[in-house]
Image 1 (spheres, rainbow, N blue to C red):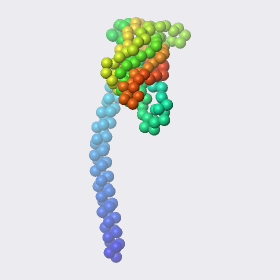
Image 2: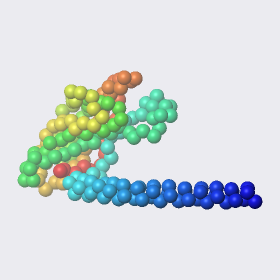
Image 3: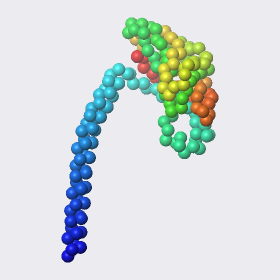
Length: 193
């Protein structure tokens, strides 16, 4: 009889303690989640309103055999190079061109053999400009950096362009493997902001 009573009391205490913890956690997380969700949704809306959506694919690092075999590197986001086009004014044909590096490996420079900015038309291709092939030095090592690479003349009505490039490389300041690393080509259409 004592064992049954103790067992019943133990079960009652266990059930009460579980419901109290769950209630407290649920209340706390709901309040925090609502604040975080509202802030996150607002940041997404602000970003969507100010940034045109690219139809392109960023250049990504070509994986070395060392990275392919390293299990720690399997779930790491790829290092990328993305073009960014900013028109000086709404009625201006002058467009500043940037390459944006974003990655998990610190980088300090970017270079390419050629880069041409073209119209999006496949039938009536028009070249707006070619950028100088050289080493563009960041001056420091960064995980995220916007490097200005040139200015091109693009008609006012044009909202998107294509990028044709070759020999895209980034210099890593990685202590285990410093040096130039190859990237894929930039593909698709990119908005002019």
